[in-house]
Amino acid sequence: QIERTLVIVKPDGYSRGLTGEVLRRIEAKGYTLAELQVISPDRERLAKHYAEHEGKPFYEPLVDFMSSGPAVFAIVEGHRCIEGFRALAGATDPTAALPGTIRGDLGRDWGLPVQQNIVHGSDSPESAEREINIWFAG
Ligand code: CMP
Image (tube, rainbow, N blue to C red; front, side, top):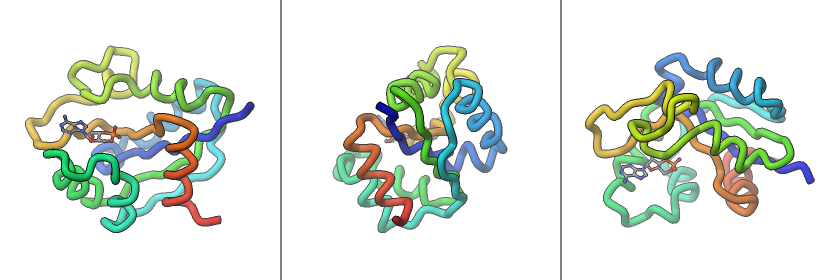
């Protein structure tokens, strides 16, 4: 059945002007952009979104980074789009991400305490629904 996933063009991707390139790759793959919004993520919703990482050394830097400026939130639809978008995104660490992927082609390590890796994609149908409910009303 058709899946939905939450994709975020994180503040590093947005500020570097990579939004169009990321959305282009999603559309070129054949997925549908069902909803789109540009917002500056607030710390309260970020705490919910990243609850599983609370207490990890990169948690505070992660929330600082994600609340540092505008980001693009998209609901992406298509058969197996959760797995498919994660393949498009590449490995979490942009230095290790393979060329051909969003992070491998466009990302690098900047020597910061949090990995600035351009995009987020939900990792399961349950995470997708949970995350979509945090960022999209109704
Ligand atoms: P994402 O998988 O979207 O959500 C958690 C984020 O935390 C991840 O992207 C990275 O931006 C960041 N992250 C994950 N692991 C590490 C790590 N070991 N060191 C620094 N940042 C990390």
